[in-house]
Image 1 (cartoon, helix red, strand yellow):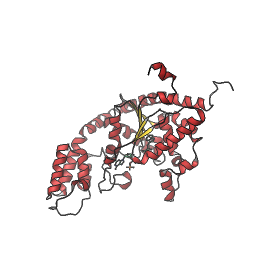
Image 2: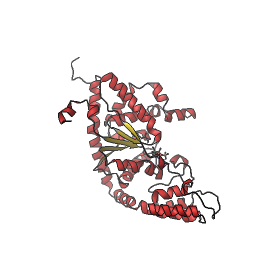
Image 3: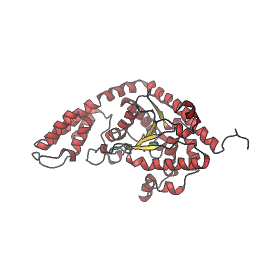
Image 4: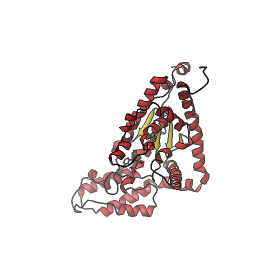
Amino acid sequence: MTDADISMQSPREATPLRVLSGIQPTGRFHWGNYFGAIRQYIELQNVGSSFYFIADLHALTTVRDPALLRSLVRDAAIDLVALGLDPTKATLYVQSDVPEVTELMWLLLTVTPMGLLERCHAYKEKKSKGIPADAGLFSYPVLMAADILAYDATIVPVGEDQVQHIEVCRDLANTFNHLYGEVFTLPKARVLDGAAKVPGTDGFKMSKSYDNTLDLFENPTVLRKKIMRMTTDSRPVEQPKDPHSDHLYQLYSLVASEEKRDAMADTYRAGGFGYGQIKKAIADASDEFFAQARDRRQVLEADHGRIEEILSDGAVRARVQARAVLERARKACGLDRSVQP
Ligand code: ADP
Ligand code: TRP
């Protein structure tokens, strides 16, 4: 295909591979966020062009303390860069720094059936528990659709829980395209590796809602104490155990080298070990695994202007892209005066 062919195509078809994902700054990142999502986003920064953002507008539906929100956004940005997100490869920005997205959201809202949003799980769950939901939570999937469509994203890596929202995004893009012409690129969800269902300190799924997290940048002494206090099963020391059914082994596997992981599996199968020994091994392996990220984080934290520079540079690049798509959408639905009525 020649350049001329490409320029003749509609914007939808000419779009190259573009990865986009967002993460809400609703708490400090934990191992579940890293192994279940962030690590995989970072790997994808080497594939095509990529956009990653901190979804502060989405977080407003739950975080209502301005000082806390400010510090969570800054911490999230520092954490992502410390963990390996490279701002020279990927565009890293804060969602609210791109106001084009919220304008695009309105255009999409005008083609969004109420019934579609009523079926979305975040809203449905709250409603079924009798918790009052606001219009922000109700229309959350439309903001998410605008986040994606504004950048002509083709691949959206997300956890299983977000797949429904990508379907909504595709639905809305299709409806808009059907009404007004080929404006939006249809994205595809890339479901993150389900194998990384990281267990928490109590053996259930790690989540900040269950207070069972190991935070990535927790003070090392505090983290070690948390690890040493983790729940264990009550089988006798001498009994051989299946490593894969034990959350301590699962956590160890995430941070240990392959060799050490295999040796640990053998220890489980042989029996005769104490859980204290395993917990110490988890803490040691975690210290080593996150050492580099921890050092990078310290440097970024000390250099006050650096993260701001990364985010404002990211916002400039993101806005160029979002503005082009918004212009396309505005024109398509008649919100411009370039054509004589
Ligand atoms: P939390 O459950 O702590 O509120 P979030 O819902 O903010 O976490 O998580 C953001 C993303 O991190 C999710 O979409 C999911 O992909 C990933 N994630 C969170 N917890 C885990 C876990 N325990 N195992 C695997 N992935 C997880
Ligand atoms: N809703 C997502 C979550 O809670 C975060 C998010 C917001 C997002 N906008 C997005 C993810 C766009 C992917 C694409 O995890």
